[in-house]
Image (cartoon, rainbow, N blue to C red):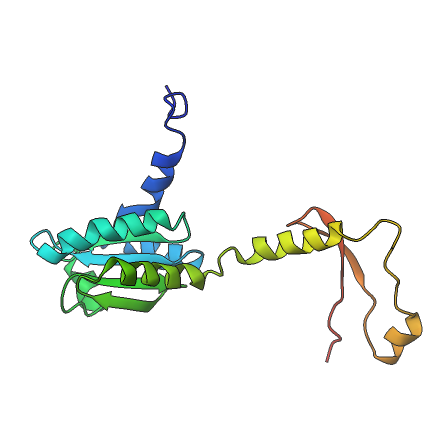
Length: 188
């Protein structure tokens, strides 16, 4: 019986993909490679650490509340000492935000919920909060507002020739399945 038949929807699977435990063997894929496309929050913790037991659940809740804009990887420093040594983790809890394979933000120790939310928001903003998808949606909205009775006017050929602009290329945009005109840069 599928999750949706139970009335649970897809939320448990989506949330399971947002947060995972990393090992020395999986760190490269879980953090470095994943952070090429989405910011990854890495929580360095240990089972004996009191502040880690408080911060961990708060961090998980903040990541889930971000709605998939960031992912979280938990690294137990006792079980993964080489990772902790390579990243020079001196005290725990330590939390880093990775973007495009690099640590770009972080903090040590337990922090208030407001600082935690600000940290997650900064990390989520690294990916541009939608980036290309938002730009495509905005462009399509602008195109839908142009009345069909008002076709675009082409520039005179003499204008393009006098400025050494190459002829436009007509191409199908894979992102929008619409035809678009692309202007190639003039070769130097």
